[in-house]
Structure formats: C-alpha cells, structure tokens
Amino acid sequence: MPSNDVRILAQAAVPTAAVGAIAAVVSGVVAGGKGAIGAVVATLIVILFMGLGLYVLQRTATSLPHLFQAMGLMLYAAQILLLFVFVAAFKHTTLFNPRAFALTLVAGTLTWIAAQTRAHMKSKILYVEPDSTSSSNNEKSHKSGHSS
Image 1 (cartoon, one colour):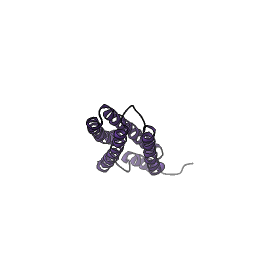
Image 2 (cartoon, rainbow, N blue to C red):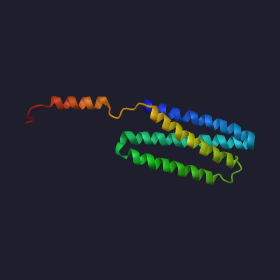
Image 3 (tube, helix red, strand yellow):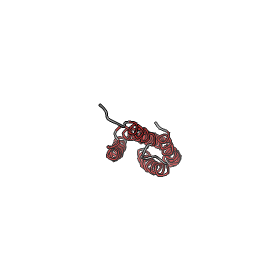
Image 4 (spheres, rainbow, N blue to C red):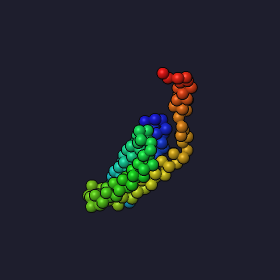
C-alpha cells in the first residue's frame, strides 16, 4: 500500500478503535461482561470490513481507475448490507449482548466513514503523476524525423 493509503487507513482505524473502546466500557457498565464482549466484537468487525474495503478500493483505483467511483459506491452499499446481515444473524445470540453489538456496529461504522472522509479531505493526493507525464513528453520529443 502506498504511504497515503496507509495514512488514511490509520486515520480511520484509530478513531474507530477509540469509539469501540468507549463503547466497550459503556456497554460493560450497562450490560455487564456480555455487553463489553459485544462491543469489542462489533468494533473488530467494523475495522476488518472497512479496512478491507479501503484496500479493495485502492487496488481498484490503481488497476481500473475508470471504475473507481462505481466501485466505491458498490463497495459502501455492500459493506452496509453485510453489517445489517451481521446484526440480523446475531440478533438472538447468547454469546454477547446483541443490543450493545448493534449500537457499537452503527457507531463504529459512522465513525469510520467520518474519519475516512476527513482523512481524504486533508490528504494532498496528486491527480496527475509528474513522473509519468514528463517521461512520455521526453519520448515524444526524441522521436523526430521519418521512421522508415
């Protein structure tokens, strides 16, 4: 991953982990140990899903830049649907508190999206790579004359 991508990943994952830790403490106080476990599991799922989505999106941007916007929209829709599937699948679980799990999942997802948006807005990513344009211009300037 390029350094900009790692920076954006860290700037999104750290606030999400902090919100997850706060949610685990609050859930532990309100719902006991099962609430804390539910909050920790939800935080890990959000960081895993969203981090994997960011990685896939960055790979798409480098290999298929014309599909970047469509892939981004599809990826966020798929992530939100998968998170709803997780909430529905663990609605009646006894492993942890499902309400703490669902609330932390929503809070973590919103935190990730806000932090990732902020990181993208603050990053200074070049739209044109200077090396690629200068090398192609040099090649064109050296090709003068007839090619027989």
